Image 1 (cartoon, helix red, strand yellow):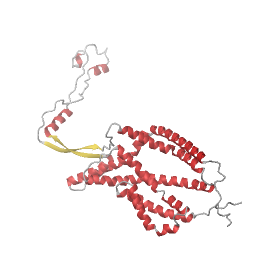
Image 2 (cartoon, rainbow, N blue to C red; image 1 turned 180 degrees about the vertical axis):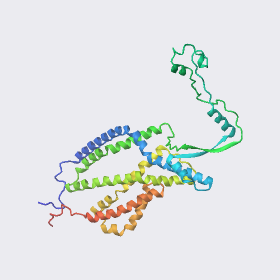
Image 3 (cartoon, rainbow, N blue to C red; image 1 turned 90 degrees about the vertical axis):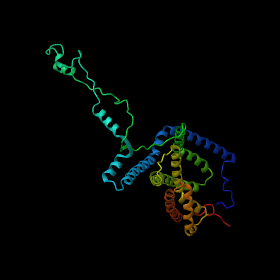
Image 4 (cartoon, rainbow, N blue to C red; image 1 turned 60 degrees about the vertical axis):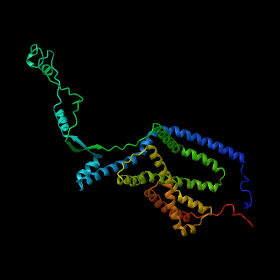
Length: 374
């Protein structure tokens, strides 16, 4: 006999409130154990992760210093540089520094370089004349005689130990050096804390399937069969959206955000000196914000399914929704307009995707109201 709406839909359950609490305790304990094991595994990959997440930062720093070197040379000479100079700087990733060298020191170093001096190694007897070597030439091979009288240079490691007093005039020149993209730690314990934090993040990622499984085991006990079917459909969709948002932030958005921020450094003639702890926080914040924001279509579909928001409301209030999207993008991203726009524009497209999901997947009738007889 079909159940009426006022019947107890949970009458067939065999779990009491205490049983649910016990199930929650067991699931949380298993989830914590999985998280700890994932953390221990993550510590083994923490060094690689910290090096990998610095990749977009170092690429942006190299591009910043290359552009700065070209702009500085163009400003100094007042004209465009030859194309081969552009290629030289970009291909070899070199920047120049203006230095001053004393003219007298220049000549002194040149003389030391071309005539460093040599020490002669002579055969036993100390005579430099090959003919004075004792013995018969027939009894000593010619090759050994030649080797015995050969002079071998033993240049000194450091030439010109004493540097004379500075004298004018000075010669202005430039030296080229490789780009140094160094991410710094400002105290002794910062590197250790970064290692621990990276291990924890990797551990969360590794153990997340097992943790979600334990959460699902607890939640599934209170769901109907048709509700479990929806979770099996929407959970993979949610995971794909989260990974798409996080990947977009790391592989695409970071490049343009750093270009924008370093552009202000160049305009204000301030050299960036990034700190690893601040960069790690930035790396974690932006992908998580993008991953959460990309859940918008599922949130819209959920609100439509439970009857809170209708499809007509989504269509009629789309202007207000876009305003809310831009405000949320401002809150979920750092204080720069590039990352805000790069989040708001995909979210706007996802909003209309959510409208399409609500239209293509309409609400179903309740399975418990079909057999109701008033």
